[in-house]
Length: 359
Image (cartoon, rainbow, N blue to C red; front, top):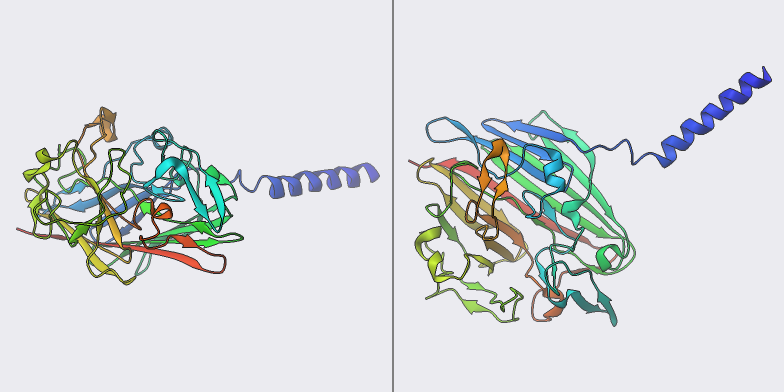
């Protein structure tokens, strides 16, 4: 009996230890799907990533309108942030450094001497926990969570982050990104980095897609794409999308294509329409709303020979990104709205996509 009791006790210790120490191990990288009406969206908890968005065209034919990969392992090797949530600070930080409350922080550069999208191992390159997964009901949703530790990629303070994807009737997808600073003030600027092609992910370039961006100004950048700190009007420039224009109508006036932050008109922290994209051939229309002050318009300039879904090879201008955000490099420009989140306060970022059709 003593031997049996001792054995049972040993087994209890082993199991308890596995539960305590191995709680992270039970979390696996997987694929999760939400469906509502005509809209079907798949995700992976690697990078809290949007994997696919299936939507019919004006003829009723289903198609996948975002770039991506067939395998979860391909997302682990991705270097283009395809479909992922990027952070702790999206976009660029000049010199990979900043000063906050008298302390100087040196970050880990991953684009020359600058930091891009949170560093070499940002939020797009980590496994997120699946906190909730509601597949049915009026608004199917999934919640991803990640705890960023104090000092991760050089950033101060521990940060608790959640990203909630929800589908609503009427072909609507909402993304809610939240973050809480747990012990220190820290910069936070999350962005959702999906590559959209409303003609289908394998339909070629997006130069014929029509774009409208509700922004009268943009933040000019230097040769390294770091904001100068100034604001410029879009009038008389290739950046003017106040009225709808096709992406390709003036892209040849730029060196590589579009990769610029727009200052959304009337931004006040409430939900505003930021952009509209239309694809004439498929008839698909995408409207984007956000509570953020900026939106990065990027035409996939640096995609080259990227083998994606079904073996299709993605090239430059094979998609477009509309990344709602705070202004890039805000930590080094006092005249830009602050991105600092203090303990006890919460960062809230909302994106709302509405899909429809035109003739």
